[in-house]
Amino acid sequence: MTKNQRIKRAARILKEGGLVAFPTETVYGLGADASNSTAVLKIYEAKERPSNNPLIVHLADLEQLPIWAKNIHPLVYRLAEYFWPGPLTLVLQKQPSIPEVVTGGQDTIAIRIPKHPIAQELLKTFGGGIAAPSANKFMRISPTHASAVKQELGSCVDMILDGGDCEVGLESTIIDMSGEVPALLRPGMLTTQAIERVLGCKLNAHSTQRAPGQHLVHYAPQTKTTILSSEKITDFLLQEENVGLVTLDELGSDPNQYAHNLYRVLRALDNQKFSRIIIEEVPATPEWEAIRDRISRACTKE
Ligand code: TXA
Ligand code: MG
Image (cartoon, rainbow, N blue to C red; front, side, top):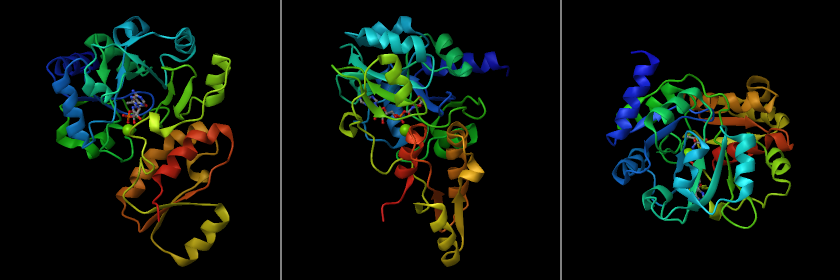
């Protein structure tokens, strides 16, 4: 099948109420027709995810935004101009007609216009909104390549569109634009500073209450996982064998390169059944914020 034929087939599966996993520039998504409650329910079943965790609705372009969101703040269009299509999700007030199952019963809706060419072509061919969380089982590491989706969801998904490795490698930055003051709900590789510069104001600190599903342990390997400074790692290795290591040397001292590699490396180490995974501490600077967030969530609370 050619790429065009695969995209047409994926769009047809979505129209018929099936599930399609597709690449975005952040991580792979598990997609269903966002206007079809029965199809959206299948996402929760496949992920084994509680149904009060809201999903992100993906759109091809801004024109469709008013179908899904109301009372859209002018600053939303400003963010869209700079960062859409891209690794940014905005939480907005939802239109009353949107099925409750998409928003986990909330009166707000998360919207993203992704940049990945396959995601774009799929959205354009499909013509509507695609509800898609990351294509992993609940609380597990997000997939950044097609075989990881297969490992996570196997036969629970009707089709996997293979788009190779995801460029960014961490989930999108989520900003709540539904209220008076913009707030950071989930840090991503699109940094807080870059967003504040465009908004011309500070973001409120991220409040996990407003983002259901942001559990403390999340994005977690099954192997026991710990963060240590490089000096402590040396001591640790003298005591314990059979340890999988994630170091700055190996993943990259540039945060974008590190983020691109992180989930693939964590998943590979997790599959090797080490007795423990040790992640070397990363710099405390703003460009590493999203990475610090994800590795701290990957850690076992001991
Ligand atoms: O990069 C990404 O964002 C990927 C790709 C596929 O787009 N998707 C993703 O989806 O990471 P998911 O479901 O794993 O995470 C979405 C998060 C939820 O955990 C929830 O916290 C937040 O988005 N969210 C969704 N709707 C919301 C709402 N109405 N209010 C607050 N938070 C919301
Ligand atoms: Mg997820």
